[in-house]
Length: 411
Image (tube, rainbow, N blue to C red; front, side, top):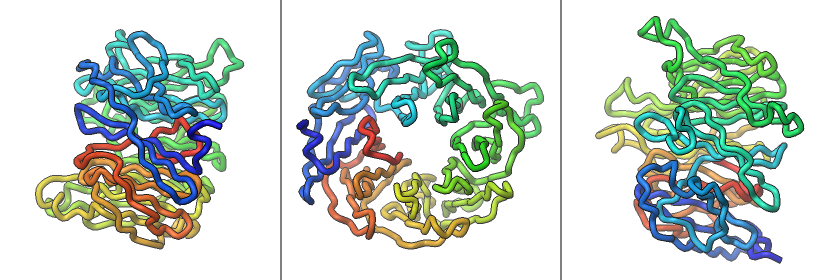
């Protein structure tokens, strides 16, 4: 039996300190908690993040799976470079694939190594026994969100204001993992320049599909609207106003959309967080909950669909930032939707940074505290803190979870 199979629960996380990072592993077995740090190799010295090694996750023996984008090879290593690229990823459960998205460089949103003609890359890896890169696809510029619908994958491009539709049926050898169509998210009446087309200021961020309505919903953060898309026709059929939102989440019953965001402009001394609920049966916003001095960073439903967890983090400047509550997690009753009924306020560690993710595995809830360099581990049933363990040095800027092991879910 492998090293990881001996444990009840294993969580792999990457701690980003800016120019360097570390990978930590939490193993829980019969209430015994062990934290291991994967060996940090010397930095590559690459200024271009697209040329740095990509950390995929750990194999069953606990060794690091590293993809070298220059050599285009996957190797199994005892450790990983300190400046490894911890890319965001999306699991394709139907096809047993994982898609890693590349934001491109900070100035242009382009990936010069993989997409010299322009755009950024999406890398599709097989999650089969022997991992392999199936294809590196050049899509649009900037950050991407991926949603899988039937035999297609929809990929949004933040800096272009578009969604690209890719074939995702491996039996269709002609269209598989190829770009078939591009949806332009432009709303001309919301642009200052009448000649704008692509790129535009839609800034898509947040895309989910409902099997109940058979529609795809994409949040245009720049316009404050949701584009309702017919995935079969690959066209926008309606727009729903949703201001003060920067992301979308689908409810477990697929009848409600939950938007989250923050107002930093109305009051220079206070950040006003917001959660909004859209009823997909009426396509109307039915609940708006403002959260004074609370920046809702990441939100996810528990695996059983009973609870909605909303983590806190930091945003804003000066007094706004100083007044923020950055050491709590809000827990809502998901079964009360569309009402946002608060069940619990959990005290955890500090996240004086822009993002605090959340993960679920084997009945545990994992809440990282980047500023403290710790991880709070909760019992999922009671939300009681089981333990808080050190996973790295204080002052972490961002923590990302590895979903290579499919027993872990979250963001």
